Image 1: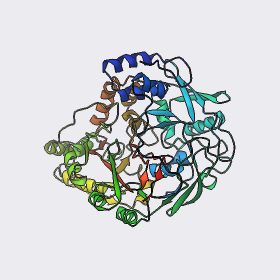
Image 2 (image 1 turned 90 degrees about the horizontal axis):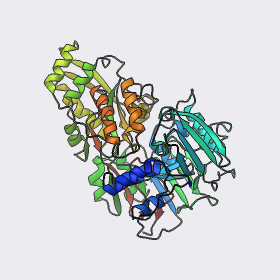
Image 3 (image 1 turned 60 degrees about the horizontal axis):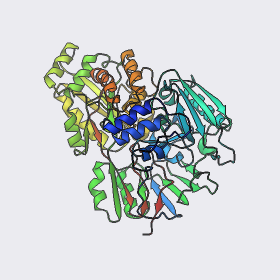
Image 4 (image 1 turned 60 degrees about the vertical axis):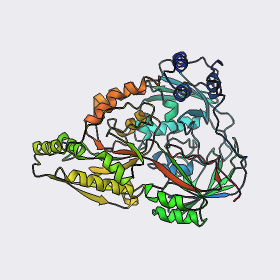
Length: 542
């Protein structure tokens, strides 16, 4: 087998030898090996050659054609500061112009991007990064370590309102170490740091972003393959190919994003009539219609995206765990999947870690027990039942409301009278983390530990349930320090158990993901996190 090498030329991390032994013995699979060695800075070319598979690459049946304009139907949301973005849809627009330090592909393997290499210390607390010296901003400035330091310091500043403040809370220092290099120092080991740097709130902005007004659409400097031309909230956004892009040129001349409103059937009608070429997302409700349309391709996949019906544990009546337990015991997760999503997905067990995530431990679900739910309510002082209200916004489609309606029927059997407060999506976004009982769509992340770190760590920026447990935090810290793919699930067992037993949420299922595109669209990947890179997309002749 080929000798492994790092991208930086630095010595291999001490854990690489053990990973090699495990992949040889079959203890871990090839994908797990590639992911773990990529975190540790091993080059993908040498890792692929080591496995006897060459450098991983996307199959290409046709030669891409340059030119043309792609029309993409999606919401054009309010956007000023990318690190404050709460929804992935907006990030897929600025992803054309702004780039990240790393890139995580559709197989959840991490690759160099603006950072061409990284080298972790043996204890995973010191990480040395080398920037690609070719990278240039659209205003002609070279990308420098000062740009990166500016961004990371903003993410973790005491006054930061970004989810990055929680995600990168372990960063204790970031410093320049050379003309094209910088160092990140952590207070605790985080094995997946390179992977986390591709989170959608982590694009690298120019070091003068704040000095220039802190409004990216108004001053859209970027290092990416496209430049922003227009950005009209609720209407459209247009991007034009950069002739002076530092990397591999994109194929399309322009990309036009068009906001057609919230009704997905309107989007499909526009696709069928040729007004647009691709849709951001569809749902199970439109599946039969999609399949019936001529000259339309249906794309689908499974990932760790889900609905979370969470209760704020410090708000009455949810500050009484017996009430929360009663809600979970009365809920029928299988029925929600079968009725609200036609069974197209995977059953979940109320702890927000998916079988599609590499650190998933198959924790046993607590069986439904309506009689026990009633008894717990009586103990909590609600012998005659209880009135609750859940707020939702159908941000991903009406299947959210359909799911809540099944839950409503389930809870009624236990004497829980659940009212549905259905808001327009635009009204739900400002209150998603403020309502005592809310239904929120959570996107895929490569590791369950990354999701739980954002959503349930004490004091986290996106901890909408207000869950606070030092025991949980400590167990999560341990899990996030594990590199060995074969040991990560076991490390997550305690984390998942604590969260499940705390009865924080009803998290019923992992829905399959769908979208549709014209047959002429080529090179588009339905990334598990819905992180769409358009530089490889092109249009074939009709």
